[in-house]
Length: 417
Image (cartoon, rainbow, N blue to C red; front, side):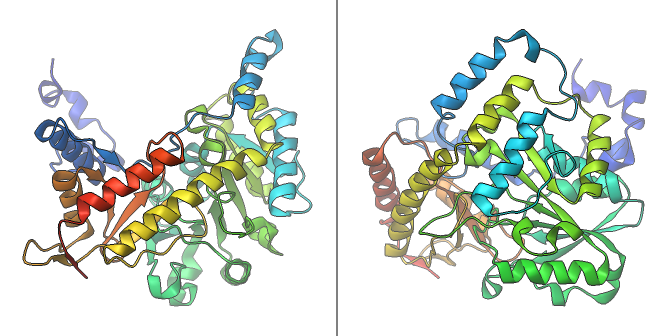
């Protein structure tokens, strides 16, 4: 039977309100990533002989380091690693604490009580609201941004208050603009730096402001930091936990997906306030039975070798330089980020003598359908598109070719800004 046939059965009326209730699956709105997927398929069909350049994908373009892969193979063959790991093995927790010290200069993290592994950051973000949110409680989030924490806040009957990230504020949230009544009622503040999609980086001064604000209003801070070690041009990686008082108000989430090319491996960790770590561990214990021990041991190997990430960052930095130069030669005002592999660019108003772009989505659709360049649009706080420098290219010569091809395709029109 088809899905439509089952919509006439009792199953349809039994869905929870949090996912749409009796109307689940009947919404005709199309999620933007589905629009991108459809546009890519259409472009490939219309222009089968032209290379589609994918600058939208938000995951690394290469495999994990050979040493990490070899460590996985070695550990996977050991009988003692076959069982459940529950809330993690001591070796991984110790490696995570040492990593925070070595890369971010975070002092005093107890690997026993202040670190716990997660099966990637996404499940951790999904579970954390269960530790805090009751019906009516508020989570404060920035937009544009990654919505998972907000989605689960709403699942639990909570509310989400959004703060726009604007260029004039260097894409940092203006905490003073949050209304007093919202701040007093809020339980969670979610931050993500270096930021997806803006590529913006936080500063120690901003994090110190966050700590003071959180203490004033008794708000727990959740800092999602999957790109924290991917920094460029001499910028030192920054952890929220390196700021005095941060551990008193929150936790930080790290992932090996982006910084170690281990996206499909699903391994990360939550570190910081021991009471929050304990609560998350209890909720997690009722959601999963832990990541495969061999993966944790391979990840521990990676954490002990941060030079792996440094090499990855060098590649992304090189690609950012090429892309920024190409776009700016076409009239854009692109600025190289200090971290992450995302370049967030204001969409043009239109093409001189041609079509207009009212939104970032309009421009993104133009790029994919007419130029076969895939990007991700963001219209939450202005019309922007996100380019990712994780495009597939083997070696520097191929990187130059791809960027030159982007410039060539966009050079036959004159954009208006």
